[in-house]
Amino acid sequence: MHAVEDSSLPNLVTVGCANFESVPRDKAATLEKLLATMRDAARQGCQLVVFPELALNTWGVCGDCARRHRPCSWHLDQAEPAPGPAADAVAALARELDLHVIYGFEERDEEEAGVVYNAAAMIAPDGLLGTYRKLHLGIPLETDRFTPGKTLPVFETRIGPIGIQICYDFYNNPELSRILALKGARLLVNPTGRSDLPRGGENLRHATLVRAQENLVYAASANRVGAHDDARWAGNSVIAGPAFPGFGRVLAEAGRGEELVVATLNFRQLAAWHDWLPWREWRLGPQLPVTRLVAEEWAALVAKAEH
Image 1 (cartoon, rainbow, N blue to C red):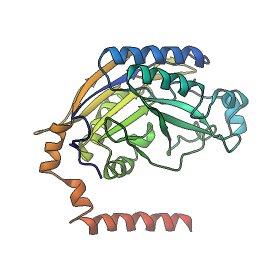
Image 2 (cartoon, one colour):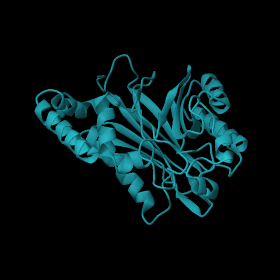
Image 3 (spheres, rainbow, N blue to C red):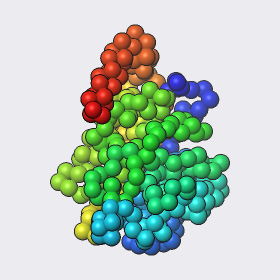
Image 4 (cartoon, helix red, strand yellow):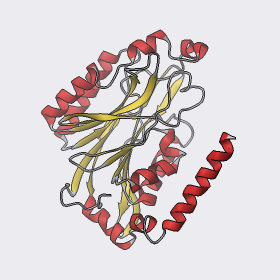
């Protein structure tokens, strides 16, 4: 488990979150927009830029997927493995710009035909580190097309360990953030497709602040914008975290249109919170009996559900 302030990692990390609108049914044009935003992020000093859920792809209801209860031929054709052509293009520019990039896309399984994941690629200047596949899928909008992932990785990068969750994973399933923090993540990233429901932007800000404060990490949520296929997206991408000696605050927040917001994260300041409240050491040390109890309660719920 990494200390939050680690001498082998930078204490200051500049992160950008993109309010981003995909070009409907034009992945090539969307990729060009994504690459242009990467260049903008590098000009603004970013070491990491985050794009929304399924940023590379058209997102919304698909009648063909719904009727088949599996990916239609068009979505299968649009999905690509990782590494694939889009990841190669992003990785080449990331190497040129010395930039880390996280973006959402439809990932096709290379070994199991007809399987597509709602995924996020983690690309470093050295290349693709891997993908996170969304665990909690919206039913039936997403389950008609996607297969849930099976792992909860922490990605080790030159700017520190990063945990990724996608949308509903992040908002309604706080145990994932807690596990990622216990596994060493000091930054939680949420590529999301938060719809423009009443107070949707407020909810995005609130959830990002809460996930950051309760785990004493920084958190960044990148959201879609625009409207198509009867869907409208809320924007309001946000970067937030604890600000010792005070509680969490918003470090950067977007509006409702396309834009890139940027903030510099100070892990030395964050470490002051861990000096005062070393919850990770307590959770796996003096409070280990409580951790065991929580694990046993989960195991009992799983056993009951399975029978």
